[in-house]
Structures are given as C-alpha cells and as structure tokens.
Image 1: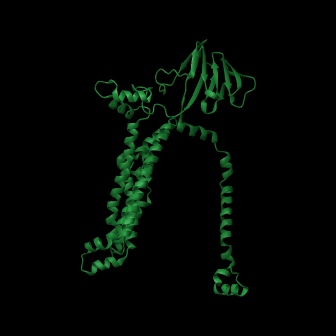
Image 2: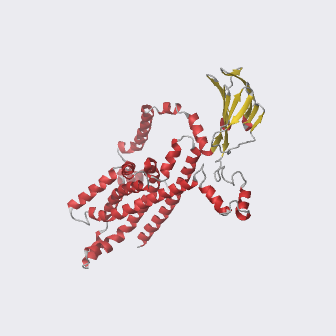
Image 3: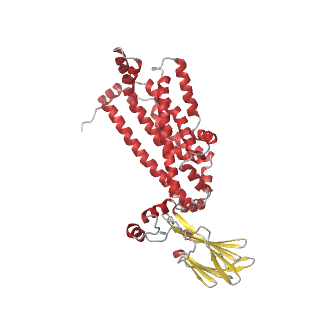
Length: 445
C-alpha cells in the first residue's frame, strides 16, 4: 500500500476543490436534516399529545375485539326459580336447538360450568362457588343482589347488585339475582360448512365424506354431494352463497368500470394531447373535463350514483367509470405528449394519412404503457370497489358493512376480509405479471 505525500495530497485537493472544500452549509446538510426530522417528530408528539392518546387507549376493548375475529363464544343463562335451576340458550346458538355441551353439567338444582384450565363455577339458587386458577370465591345470591364473601380477588368485580368473574380468554360469568349469565369462548369458526339444520351437521368429516361418496341418499331427489353443496352454499350462519355472489359482483364492478373508462379515455386523450390535436380549445376543454371527473372522489361519485340508480353494482360501476376516465385520460394524454416524434414524422414523410400516422407512428409507442396503466387501475379498483360498496354501491363492501354494523358478528367480518385479501393478492400478481410481459415486449421491440 503506497502512502501519498503531503505534496500529492495538496495537488489532489487543488484539482478537486468541490470535493475537499465544500461550503459549511453543504457539509452540515445531512446533520441538519436529521435534527430537523427529530424536532418535527418531537413537535408532533407534543402537539397531538400522542403519549396521552396511547396511554388513554382502551386496550382491553381492542383485545376483546381481536378475539372475536378468530374465536366464538357460547352464552347460556342459568335461571333460578325457587330452588329449581334452568339453563336457557340464545335462539340461534351454534350448538343447535338442543345443546348439551360436556363443559356444562346440570344435576338437579346445581349447575357446574367448566372453564378448562382457567377454573370452573358451581351454581345453585342461593350460592355460587368460583374456582379461578387455584383461587376461590363464594358469592351468596340474595333477592337484593349478589354478595361476595370475603375480599374480592383481582379477577372479580362488584358493581351494584352484580358480581363479575373474568376467566380471560376462556370467558366470564356474571352473577345477578335469580340468574347467572355465562360466556364460554372457544377457538375457531363454528358451523363453517354445515349449519344445525343440515343433516351433515355435527358429523366428523370422514363420515361426511363417506356419505357423499358411497352413502345412501338422504334426500331421494338429489345426490348426497349435491345436498352437501346446497347446505354449504345456503349455510344460514355464514351465508357462503351470498358472500361469494357479492364478491363476484365486486370483481365485475372493478373490471367493467375500468374497461369502460379505458375505452372512453383513449380517444379523449388524443384530443387532449397538444402534439396530437393542435386545437388549444379542444385541448383545454378535454383536460378540464378530465379534471372535473377526477376531482370528485370515487366515494362521492358512489354516493351520487347510489342516489340516482339505487343500491347495487350499477352505482359502483358508474363511480369507477367516472373517476378512472378522468385519471386515465390525464395519464394517457401526458404519455402522448412525451412520445418520440421521430417515429411519427417518419411515417408522415411517406405521405401516410393522419389515421395511419397515429396507428403506426404513435400507437406502438404508447399502447404498452396504456395497457400497463389500465391493468394497474383494474387491480387498484378491486380494492376500491369494496370501499364504495359499503356506501350502497353493491358488492361485498355492502355485505361487510352490514356485518360490522351489528357489532356481534366479527368472525363473519374476518371471513370476508380474508376473502378480499386473497382476491386482491391474486389480482395483484396477475396484473404485475401482465404488466411485466407488456413492458418486456415493448423493450424488445
């Protein structure tokens, strides 16, 4: 390794003064950017009180909300009348019309509920004994309210005449005069394939497969395979048929809206491009028309068209068509204005007509870009169609909004969100692959 002498270093410095003798401001610029960013973050933290917002967040509610996406709860109620106990269930219980779970056992007036490793309760008309991970609590049930005996542990609360015991994920129990309300939680999505009305409900998958392949017909008018498909498609709890139909509507909305927008934006873009159409008035009128269409958000257009046409896919298609016509028109016209004029002039020099000039001098340059942009918008609109569907424009967005409004059916919401993610993922990969092939083909020419 050869070391440079002082004279050589001086010569290099004199040869490249811009490198070795930069102004102080330019040398300090990276440090100033870092300091400015830190100051801005600190200002935002103070101005928006981010620390207070985080500390005041209802994280316990967020945890409960998250659980409802991947689990379900069963809510029996133990009602006391005199010395008798009766267990009642909600009308649409996932366990069917005659539930008899092994974790709830009734012996006369005494009812035992097992919460797994979290504990259990034993309840009768006058006394409820709670075991919670090794700790015990006795609650006396009186007409005036539930009375805990001794000091309340951290997992139990007393509010007015009610004692609540929290078993974490396993569930909770509320002890009130004359009744005990229970919530028992389990992992999974119950009755996802067959609801309690189906003859296949409650059977193991191996038995269901055997019935479909070689079993005697359950209904003489149709095969067991057709019956199983009908039961899955018309599942009253998960509504697979309606969900998949609405998902198909969303895909069709995105495709048709983007297709129509591309067809309309293409000729208008040639009018808006200054180098294609020399008329200033035509250029400006078309560009302002594009500005008008894209200045109104797709969601607002969806509200307008829902009012005009009523709820349904037509409103969604119209909203996508209007918004994308404006955006694609602008993109297409700017692409046309940046083409290489040499190819167009070459075609014109041989005496070709204006139409032929556009066909052979312009189209080969811009069509791959136009198709690539249309594919990108098609993929993007698959997501957007879900949002505009929530305001009444049809598709799975409306179905999703209806499920969220009930605030009690979050497993169905998770199912639909998962379907949307899968569809967006598939369409994204298809669009990327097609765009890549288009651009590679264009580069090859």
